[in-house]
Image (tube, rainbow, N blue to C red; front, top):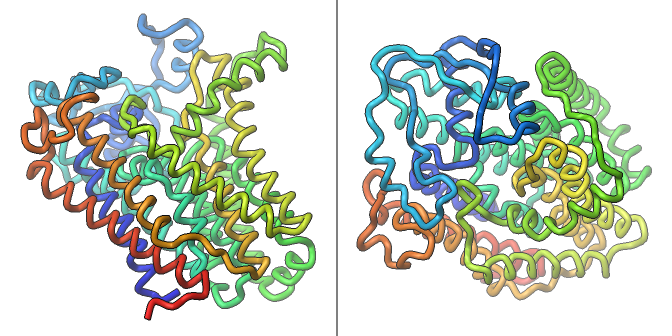
Length: 488
C-alpha cells in the first residue's frame, strides 16, 4: 500500500477524533467527571488521593456502594477547577446539553471532591494530566485532557496501520465508531483499546518480514498501553498471545525467535515489566470482588441475553450509553464483519480456523463470563468498551487468515468504503443530535440547536465529513490493492 493510503487512514481517524473531542458536551462520556478528577489530582502531584473513611451514596444499591467504597478517594481540586453540575442531562437522552450553560462558576478556592475511580491505574492519566496543568478552568482542562488522550490513541492506531499495511481491512473494521468516540474522551478505555489494536497488529504483522521494525514497535507500545491502562490488561494480553500463537503455528514462532532474538527479549522485558507494575498496583490498591452466591450455570444463563447490547456497544453507543445510532448502521457494520469472518473461515486451514474460532469465542464468551462472575455480584453490567480489547481480535485475525492463504479477497470495494464512511459520519451526527437537541429531535439540529460546541456545529460537522471521506478513500484503496486491481 502506498504511504499516502496509510496517511489518509490516520488522518481520517484524527479528523473524527478532533471533531468528537470538541462536540462531546462537557463531562458527557462514561465516568468522565470522575476521570477528570483523577487526572487533576495527578496533575497537581497526588498520584493517589486521600482515603475516604465512610462512603455513603443513597442512589446506589448496597452491593454497588460496597464496591465503590473500595475505589473512591478524595481529590484536592485547585481553585477554579471544580467541575460540578455538568452531567445535568445524564441518562435523559431526550434532553439536550443546554442545561450545562447554567452551571455556576466553580469556587475560586481549593476544594475536595470524591472521585469514584480514585484507585485506578495511574499511567493513562499521566499525559492528560501533564497538559491539564496549564488550564485555569475546568472546560479548557477537560478539552486538553481529551485532546491528549485522542493523540495517544491516534498514534497507536498509526503504529498499527504501519505494522499491518498493505492489508488493512481488518484494522478498518476493528476501529469502530465507538473506538474513536472513547478515544476522544477523557477515559483510560481509549488507550486500552488502541493499545490492544496495536499489539494485535504488531503480532500479526511479524510474519511479514518487510515490516519487522514497525511490528516490534507496535508490539511494545501496544502491549504497554494495554497492560497499564486498566486492571484486566494482563488477561487481554494472554488472550492475544494464545490466539496469535495458534494462528501462526510453531514453525513461524521458531523463525521469529531465531531471526530476532534481541527484539524478542527486549519486547518481552518491556511488556513483562508493564504486567508486573499492573499486578503490583492491583494487589496494593485494587478492589476485591465479593464472593459469588449463585450457581455457575445460573449466572451464565442470566448473562446471555445482554450479548446483543454488548455487541452494539462495541460498534457505538455514546455519551452516557444512551446515545445510539440508527439501527441500520449496526446491521451494516455487523454484515461487513460477518462477511469477512465467513470468507476467512472458508479460506483458512484447520489451524487458522481454530485461531479464528478462538477469537470469536473470546469476543462472545469473555463478556458473558465477565458479566456473570465480575459485574453481576456488584450490581453493574458489562459495557461494550470494556470488552473491545478482545472484540477487535475478530476482524484482525479474520483478515490475517485471508492474507495468509494468499487468496484474492474480492470484496466489492466501493460499497464497503461507502458503508464504513457512512457509519462513521452517522455515528458522529446522531450523537451530535443527542447533544444539541435531544434524542428524537430534528435531524436539522444545526439550524436551531439548543446546545452548541465552541464555534458552533458546522466546523465540527465539516471536520467529521473530512474524516469520513479520508477513511472511505483509504478503505477503497486498501480494498483495490488487496484485490490485485489498480487505481490507474
